Image (cartoon, rainbow, N blue to C red; front, top):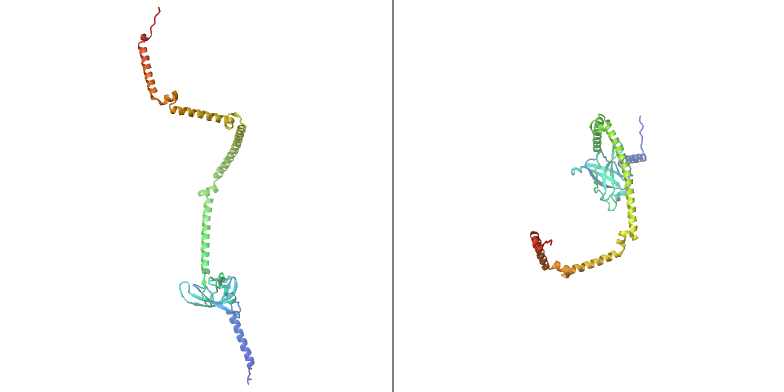
Amino acid sequence: MKRTTTVKWGSLKIGIILMIAIAMMFWASFSGGGTSIFQPKGKFVCYFKNVNGLVPGSPVWMSGVEVGNVSSISFVNLDSLRQVKVVCRLKKSVWNRLTKDARVQLGTMGFLGDKYVEVIPGNGKGPPIGEMEMVKTINAGSAPQMFKAGEQAINDARATIVNLNSLLENMNQGKGTLGQMVTNDQLYQNITKLVAGLTTLTAELQKNQVRIVSSIEKTSKVLENMSTKIDENKGTLGRIINDPTLYDNLAVSTAKLDSILRKINTSEGSLGLLVNDTAMYGEMTSLITRLNNLIADIQKNPRKYFKFSVF
């Protein structure tokens, strides 16, 4: 015969409280995201085209510190970029950094690729946003896109290596200019000759430079001596430069010549009349003409003018 077990109400209340506490602990562990469920939080909204595996309860980070968690994820299909609505909870202690210029983006944790929401705070100068207001998102690029870009980079590197191998093979076979430079020693010999010629040319230039410097020094000394003599009033050039007598004589001669030219221009004196008076020119022309006629007549009839008698 079975015994009837009586459960006391006090024990039942304790069990119910323990079950509720355990349930709250599980709920907090899955929804709290590492933050205390007793800390006051606010909610904001952000939209993504693709959340790439983000789930409710995923952490929300700000400057590398976990400050909240994802509350809910739902499809909205507002436009081509706003396909998924994400509601995030953020601690009120950092809410003042969530200003109008703040941004959010998706991040990946570790090798397994767990997703989280990263909040990029604003400059803190403006007022914080209100409850359930939208924060603009930044497309940081998805993992498949990054893997695809990495694969493309690897393919490009592989193609570069193939081209490099082909180039090295052609060089080893002596093809092209680089190949001839590697396999043919004629270029080395020519370069050696060129270097030897340049060495000889450099030596000659150095010798010429010594001679040129010596000539310049000699010329400088000659000019220095000449300048010294000029300063000491020695020689013709020194006397010309330093002695005022020559200048005075030139000034006097110039004054006299100017006086003579003035008299000539004003028809004073014989030279002035000769230059400016045309009558004298006419008489001289007539005299010369008569002399020419007289000489011609003497040559034709010398007896007319000269008589010779012995006795």
